[in-house]
Image (tube, rainbow, N blue to C red; front, side):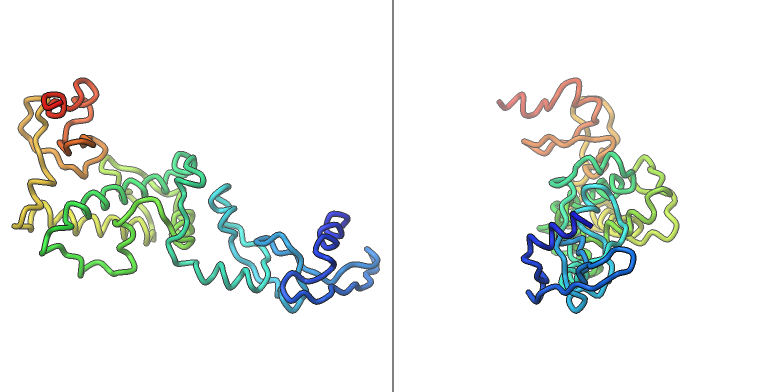
Length: 254
Protein backbone atom coordinates (compact mmCIF):
# COMPACT_ATOMS: atom_id res chain seq x y z
CA UNK A 1 0.00 0.00 0.00
CA UNK A 2 2.79 2.44 0.88
CA UNK A 3 4.55 1.76 -2.43
CA UNK A 4 1.31 2.37 -4.35
CA UNK A 5 0.69 5.60 -2.45
CA UNK A 6 4.21 6.76 -3.25
CA UNK A 7 3.80 5.97 -6.96
CA UNK A 8 0.44 7.74 -7.13
CA UNK A 9 1.92 10.74 -5.35
CA UNK A 10 4.67 10.77 -7.97
CA UNK A 11 1.96 11.09 -10.61
CA UNK A 12 0.53 14.08 -8.79
CA UNK A 13 -2.40 11.91 -7.66
CA UNK A 14 -3.75 12.08 -11.21
CA UNK A 15 -4.76 9.37 -13.66
CA UNK A 16 -1.95 8.85 -16.15
CA UNK A 17 -4.50 8.50 -18.92
CA UNK A 18 -7.02 11.34 -18.60
CA UNK A 19 -5.09 13.37 -16.00
CA UNK A 20 -8.18 13.60 -13.79
CA UNK A 21 -7.59 13.59 -10.03
CA UNK A 22 -7.65 10.10 -8.56
CA UNK A 23 -10.40 9.84 -5.96
CA UNK A 24 -10.15 8.13 -2.60
CA UNK A 25 -12.70 5.77 -1.12
CA UNK A 26 -13.11 4.22 2.31
CA UNK A 27 -12.48 0.50 2.69
CA UNK A 28 -13.30 -1.22 5.96
CA UNK A 29 -10.14 -3.30 6.10
CA UNK A 30 -7.67 -0.78 4.66
CA UNK A 31 -9.08 2.67 5.36
CA UNK A 32 -8.87 5.39 2.73
CA UNK A 33 -7.48 4.21 -0.62
CA UNK A 34 -7.25 5.68 -4.07
CA UNK A 35 -9.69 4.34 -6.64
CA UNK A 36 -6.86 3.50 -9.00
CA UNK A 37 -5.69 0.47 -10.96
CA UNK A 38 -2.06 -0.36 -11.71
CA UNK A 39 -1.03 -0.99 -15.33
CA UNK A 40 1.66 -3.66 -15.64
CA UNK A 41 2.66 -2.33 -19.07
CA UNK A 42 3.29 1.34 -18.22
CA UNK A 43 3.97 0.98 -14.50
CA UNK A 44 1.47 3.78 -13.78
CA UNK A 45 -1.91 4.12 -12.06
CA UNK A 46 -5.19 4.89 -13.82
CA UNK A 47 -8.77 5.71 -12.95
CA UNK A 48 -11.52 3.11 -13.54
CA UNK A 49 -12.55 4.92 -16.73
CA UNK A 50 -9.10 4.49 -18.27
CA UNK A 51 -8.42 1.03 -16.86
CA UNK A 52 -11.13 -1.64 -17.29
CA UNK A 53 -8.89 -4.34 -15.77
CA UNK A 54 -8.45 -6.16 -19.04
CA UNK A 55 -5.47 -8.48 -19.26
CA UNK A 56 -2.73 -9.02 -21.84
CA UNK A 57 0.74 -10.55 -22.06
CA UNK A 58 3.55 -8.04 -21.51
CA UNK A 59 6.04 -8.16 -24.43
CA UNK A 60 9.02 -7.25 -22.25
CA UNK A 61 8.24 -10.09 -19.82
CA UNK A 62 7.88 -12.52 -22.73
CA UNK A 63 11.32 -11.61 -24.08
CA UNK A 64 13.13 -11.40 -20.75
CA UNK A 65 11.50 -14.21 -18.75
CA UNK A 66 9.48 -16.23 -21.32
CA UNK A 67 6.48 -15.26 -19.19
CA UNK A 68 3.17 -15.40 -21.05
CA UNK A 69 0.94 -14.77 -18.06
CA UNK A 70 -1.66 -12.09 -18.78
CA UNK A 71 -1.44 -9.03 -16.52
CA UNK A 72 -3.93 -6.22 -15.94
CA UNK A 73 -3.22 -3.28 -18.21
CA UNK A 74 -4.84 0.08 -18.88
CA UNK A 75 -7.13 0.47 -21.88
CA UNK A 76 -4.53 2.32 -23.95
CA UNK A 77 -1.88 -0.35 -23.32
CA UNK A 78 -4.39 -3.10 -24.11
CA UNK A 79 -5.20 -1.52 -27.48
CA UNK A 80 -1.50 -1.12 -28.24
CA UNK A 81 -0.57 -4.71 -27.37
CA UNK A 82 -3.52 -6.20 -29.23
CA UNK A 83 -2.92 -3.88 -32.18
CA UNK A 84 0.59 -5.23 -32.75
CA UNK A 85 -0.09 -8.80 -31.58
CA UNK A 86 0.33 -10.26 -35.07
CA UNK A 87 3.03 -7.87 -36.29
CA UNK A 88 6.66 -9.08 -36.45
CA UNK A 89 8.31 -6.56 -34.13
CA UNK A 90 10.11 -8.51 -31.40
CA UNK A 91 13.81 -9.31 -31.87
CA UNK A 92 14.69 -12.16 -29.55
CA UNK A 93 18.40 -12.26 -30.41
CA UNK A 94 18.88 -8.55 -29.65
CA UNK A 95 16.93 -8.61 -26.39
CA UNK A 96 17.62 -12.00 -24.83
CA UNK A 97 19.64 -14.42 -27.04
CA UNK A 98 19.81 -16.92 -24.17
CA UNK A 99 16.20 -17.83 -24.90
CA UNK A 100 17.35 -19.88 -27.88
CA UNK A 101 19.27 -22.13 -25.49
CA UNK A 102 16.53 -22.20 -22.88
CA UNK A 103 13.55 -22.84 -25.19
CA UNK A 104 14.10 -25.81 -27.57
CA UNK A 105 11.09 -24.99 -29.76
CA UNK A 106 12.37 -21.47 -30.33
CA UNK A 107 15.72 -22.88 -31.41
CA UNK A 108 13.95 -25.18 -33.88
CA UNK A 109 11.99 -22.24 -35.30
CA UNK A 110 15.18 -20.24 -35.73
CA UNK A 111 16.98 -23.04 -37.59
CA UNK A 112 14.02 -23.52 -39.91
CA UNK A 113 13.99 -19.79 -40.62
CA UNK A 114 17.75 -19.81 -41.28
CA UNK A 115 17.13 -22.48 -43.91
CA UNK A 116 14.27 -20.47 -45.40
CA UNK A 117 16.45 -17.37 -45.54
CA UNK A 118 19.22 -19.21 -47.40
CA UNK A 119 16.73 -20.54 -49.95
CA UNK A 120 15.02 -17.16 -50.24
CA UNK A 121 18.25 -15.40 -51.22
CA UNK A 122 19.17 -18.12 -53.72
CA UNK A 123 15.80 -17.71 -55.43
CA UNK A 124 15.82 -13.90 -55.66
CA UNK A 125 16.81 -13.88 -59.32
CA UNK A 126 14.63 -16.83 -60.31
CA UNK A 127 11.66 -15.82 -62.46
CA UNK A 128 9.90 -19.11 -61.66
CA UNK A 129 10.20 -18.86 -57.87
CA UNK A 130 6.93 -19.99 -56.25
CA UNK A 131 6.32 -16.79 -54.27
CA UNK A 132 2.64 -16.78 -55.18
CA UNK A 133 2.14 -20.00 -53.21
CA UNK A 134 3.34 -18.37 -49.98
CA UNK A 135 0.92 -15.90 -48.31
CA UNK A 136 2.31 -12.37 -48.10
CA UNK A 137 1.72 -12.30 -44.34
CA UNK A 138 4.14 -15.25 -43.93
CA UNK A 139 7.00 -14.04 -46.10
CA UNK A 140 8.84 -12.35 -43.26
CA UNK A 141 9.63 -15.85 -41.98
CA UNK A 142 12.07 -16.27 -44.87
CA UNK A 143 13.09 -12.65 -45.51
CA UNK A 144 14.89 -12.48 -42.16
CA UNK A 145 15.44 -14.78 -39.20
CA UNK A 146 15.30 -12.87 -35.92
CA UNK A 147 12.01 -10.94 -35.77
CA UNK A 148 8.86 -12.51 -34.33
CA UNK A 149 5.36 -11.38 -33.52
CA UNK A 150 3.91 -11.85 -30.06
CA UNK A 151 1.54 -14.36 -31.65
CA UNK A 152 4.49 -16.34 -33.06
CA UNK A 153 6.12 -16.58 -29.64
CA UNK A 154 2.84 -17.50 -27.99
CA UNK A 155 2.39 -20.44 -30.34
CA UNK A 156 5.96 -21.59 -29.74
CA UNK A 157 5.38 -21.38 -25.99
CA UNK A 158 2.24 -23.51 -26.19
CA UNK A 159 4.01 -26.46 -27.81
CA UNK A 160 7.52 -26.04 -26.48
CA UNK A 161 7.50 -29.08 -24.13
CA UNK A 162 6.36 -31.35 -26.98
CA UNK A 163 9.04 -30.51 -29.53
CA UNK A 164 11.52 -33.15 -30.62
CA UNK A 165 14.33 -32.11 -32.91
CA UNK A 166 15.38 -34.28 -35.85
CA UNK A 167 18.60 -34.29 -37.84
CA UNK A 168 17.19 -31.90 -40.46
CA UNK A 169 16.16 -29.40 -37.75
CA UNK A 170 12.46 -30.00 -38.34
CA UNK A 171 10.26 -31.18 -35.47
CA UNK A 172 9.38 -34.87 -35.65
CA UNK A 173 6.12 -34.57 -33.77
CA UNK A 174 4.38 -31.32 -32.93
CA UNK A 175 0.70 -31.84 -32.20
CA UNK A 176 -1.44 -28.93 -33.34
CA UNK A 177 1.52 -26.64 -33.88
CA UNK A 178 0.62 -24.24 -36.64
CA UNK A 179 3.82 -22.18 -36.64
CA UNK A 180 6.54 -24.83 -36.84
CA UNK A 181 4.52 -27.03 -39.18
CA UNK A 182 3.91 -23.96 -41.34
CA UNK A 183 7.63 -23.17 -41.47
CA UNK A 184 8.38 -26.74 -42.49
CA UNK A 185 5.72 -26.55 -45.21
CA UNK A 186 7.27 -23.39 -46.68
CA UNK A 187 10.69 -25.01 -46.56
CA UNK A 188 9.42 -28.04 -48.47
CA UNK A 189 8.05 -25.79 -51.23
CA UNK A 190 11.32 -23.92 -51.61
CA UNK A 191 13.47 -27.05 -51.56
CA UNK A 192 11.22 -28.76 -54.12
CA UNK A 193 11.63 -25.79 -56.45
CA UNK A 194 15.40 -25.44 -56.07
CA UNK A 195 16.32 -29.12 -56.15
CA UNK A 196 13.76 -30.69 -58.50
CA UNK A 197 11.68 -28.12 -60.37
CA UNK A 198 13.82 -25.10 -61.26
CA UNK A 199 15.33 -25.01 -64.73
CA UNK A 200 16.84 -21.53 -64.54
CA UNK A 201 19.84 -21.91 -62.25
CA UNK A 202 18.75 -22.46 -58.64
CA UNK A 203 20.08 -26.01 -58.60
CA UNK A 204 23.84 -25.25 -58.88
CA UNK A 205 23.55 -22.68 -56.09
CA UNK A 206 21.75 -25.12 -53.79
CA UNK A 207 23.94 -28.19 -54.25
CA UNK A 208 27.71 -28.39 -54.48
CA UNK A 209 30.38 -31.00 -53.79
CA UNK A 210 32.83 -30.58 -50.96
CA UNK A 211 36.24 -29.78 -52.50
CA UNK A 212 38.07 -30.69 -49.29
CA UNK A 213 37.30 -34.42 -49.43
CA UNK A 214 36.76 -37.13 -52.04
CA UNK A 215 33.03 -37.61 -51.51
CA UNK A 216 31.06 -37.07 -54.72
CA UNK A 217 27.63 -36.89 -53.10
CA UNK A 218 26.40 -33.30 -53.40
CA UNK A 219 25.96 -31.10 -50.34
CA UNK A 220 22.95 -28.86 -49.91
CA UNK A 221 23.62 -25.34 -48.74
CA UNK A 222 20.44 -25.32 -46.63
CA UNK A 223 21.56 -28.40 -44.66
CA UNK A 224 22.94 -26.20 -41.88
CA UNK A 225 23.42 -29.08 -39.45
CA UNK A 226 25.98 -30.85 -41.64
CA UNK A 227 27.44 -28.21 -43.93
CA UNK A 228 29.07 -24.80 -43.69
CA UNK A 229 29.25 -22.10 -46.37
CA UNK A 230 32.34 -19.95 -46.66
CA UNK A 231 31.29 -16.37 -45.92
CA UNK A 232 33.78 -15.00 -48.46
CA UNK A 233 33.29 -17.10 -51.59
CA UNK A 234 30.10 -19.07 -50.90
CA UNK A 235 31.66 -22.51 -51.36
CA UNK A 236 29.98 -25.28 -49.36
CA UNK A 237 31.86 -27.84 -47.28
CA UNK A 238 31.21 -30.59 -44.77
CA UNK A 239 31.41 -29.05 -41.32
CA UNK A 240 34.07 -31.56 -40.28
CA UNK A 241 36.20 -30.82 -43.37
CA UNK A 242 35.94 -27.06 -42.94
CA UNK A 243 36.99 -27.22 -39.28
CA UNK A 244 40.14 -29.12 -40.23
CA UNK A 245 41.25 -27.19 -43.33
CA UNK A 246 39.16 -24.00 -43.76
CA UNK A 247 38.31 -22.79 -47.28
CA UNK A 248 40.79 -24.08 -49.85
CA UNK A 249 39.47 -21.75 -52.56
CA UNK A 250 39.94 -18.57 -50.53
CA UNK A 251 43.35 -19.75 -49.30
CA UNK A 252 44.51 -20.34 -52.90
CA UNK A 253 43.37 -16.95 -54.15
CA UNK A 254 44.53 -14.88 -51.18
